[in-house]
Each structure stands twice: as structure tokens, then as C-alpha cells.
Image 1 (cartoon, rainbow, N blue to C red):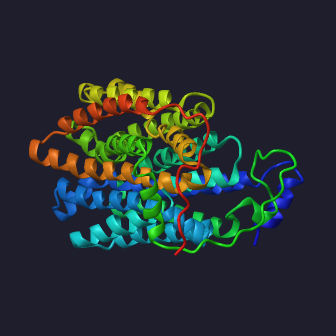
Image 2: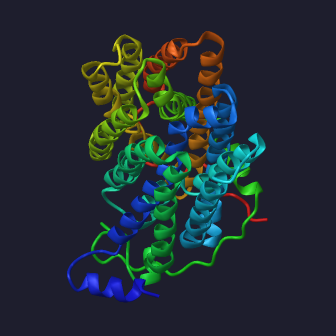
Image 3: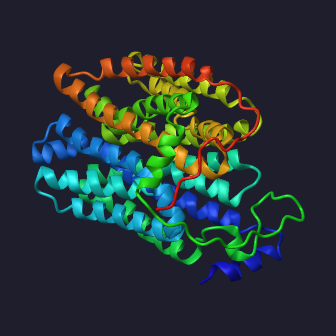
Length: 434
């Protein structure tokens, strides 16, 4: 309703509507990441109120990560068939509904349903796949920078909401901490309804950075949806070594970030006598550094060898995880960790997206990256449950931290096994319509 007049108004001022799409996508990532990050601050309050141990609660959060990741390949096909606006609004509705319903839960299965299933499916319908789709559809240049900015939304969501949530938990209880995130999701859903469009040609535009004189592409009919399509794409890349290297290293990426630190960091700090508010503030500090690091990573990925960038990111993250148990959880020690770990929390995304696009071609990049992202969230699920299990059995998180650090160093070495791609090629056979 408002997108076409706004696009015309921006054009008269020399601005492209693609930046509106980036802004809306950024806000979507911000609100959904806040919903994903908030449960990490609730491990101990939920344990105290309901008597569930950390391993039980972690298992529910692991379900969230599995569904979050497995929705990736199907999210790409849903966006192609039903459009960005419909998919994003549905996703935000599921996320906000899961948050709200959880405030009334009394049984463990309700936690699994609300924060495992609803939050996992809802957030997985957008996640990083939305960033990849927006960057490839709306931009012919600056794609790496755009992916970096959109990926940084998750850091910004953590930066804004986690300290607020921790403060609300401490003063008003964990249920009140859900309210700001719920409101944010509802507001963004309204903005998406009003302003989101699927492709630039719907507004009579070419992608940002298109060569002068490029004709506006005709509006193609929506492809026929089939649940077999993502599996056909997976079959097309299953024999490609690059796909499995990206899948495996992104598995380690999720294991060492969302699953371990995002889920268990506040509980980890609590074991060392640090209360939730200062622990959440350290996470916010990581978010601030990651906002800078991920945007910079996007800029660098447009200019430098993406394999070498990933080598540095995984190596730095591994060393940071080895350092954390020796930080003594002082202001100086945690600040040092937050700086080095935070700079590359999700800085791995822009180079990974670029490598996927260069190897498998622009048309299939979104769906292939969806499967790579599934590996990321499977790794997160393993760490979310595994670290909780380690904490229950050994009363310490240290073995989980050391294992994740070693895995990151392994990923740094393995990523160099990819040959530097010369040009983007369509290596995946077109999926057959049902």
C-alpha cells in the first residue's frame, strides 16, 4: 500500500528502495534475535520456579535450534512461493505467540512447545536465509556489506534487549522480561505488512548497483511449491566437497556461538558468582563488538579472500574460548574476552554466503545457504544440550568450552581446503517443479 509512493518519493531524492528493504529486514532480525537470546537469561529463574534442572531446560532450547536450522532450506522455497512479506509476518506472529504463551506455562512440555517449537519454526522462517535472499534479489553490488549489516542485527538485538531483560527479571520476574521483545515483534510485523516487497521489479526498479541501461526484469510467476525442492537442491550439491566444508565449519560456528555462549553464558557467570545483569551486560558488550566486526566482515568479504577471512575468524574464536575459563570472570578478563570473541561472533556469515554464491551460483545461493545454515543450528543444538549435560554431570562448563575452542581451530584449518573460486557458476541443477 505504501511501498510504491515511498519508492517514488525516494527516487526523486536519489535514494533506492532497496535500503528500505534492508532496514525492515534489519529490524526483523533484531526482534527475532532478541527472542532467541532471551531464554539464555532465563535458565536459572525457570529452574528456581519450576524445579527443572539446566539439562532439561537446555533440551527444550536445543529443539528450538534444530527447528531453527532445519527451516532454513524450506524458508527459501516459502519465500519464493509466498513472498517475503507473508513469510516474515507469519514468522513474527509465531515468535511473538510463543513468547506470550510461555508466560502462562506450568508444565515442561509447554516450554518445549512454546520456546522449542513455536520459537524455532518462527525464527527459522527468516533467520540468516532472509539476509541472503534480500542481498541477492535487491543488490547487484555491495552484497557482502549488506549481508554483514543484516547479520549484525542479531548482535544488535542482543545489545538492546538482554540487559533490559536481565534487569526486568531481577526486579519484576521473568514474565515481565518477555514484554519488550513481544512488543518489538508486533511493531515490526506491522512495518513488514506496510513496506516489504518481494523484488525490485515489483516497483519498476532494477537491483541496486545494476549496470546503467539494465532493463527492469518482468515479474515472473511464483514457482510451484513442493517440499521435495529443497531435497532436490541438497541432492544436487551432496557430491560437492565445498558444500560439506561449508556445512561442517558452520556446524562448528553454531556450536561455539548460539548453542554455547548465547544459551549458557549467563548461567556460566552465575556459577562464578556473577549475577545476571552484569553477565548480560558482557553479552551486550560482545554484541557491540560484533556489530562492528560483522559489518566490517561484510566489507572485507567484497574485497579479500573469504577463505582467509574465515581462517582468522575461527582461529580467533577458538583462542578466545580457551581463554574464558582463565579470565577469572573479572571486569578486565571478561572485557578482554568480549572484545576478541565478540568481533567475530557472526562475522563468519558474509564470507560463507559469498563462498556459497561463488560456488553454486546466484539463483541457488539462498537455498544452498539454507542447508549450510541448517548445519549451523544443528551444531547449536548439540552445544545447547551438550553443555547443559556437562554442567549437570561435572558441575562446570569448562570441558564444553575447551571442546568448542578445539573445534574452532579445526574449522580454521579445514576452511583452507576450499579452492579460491574464480567466478560464480551454476553448479546446482535446476529443481524440478512438481
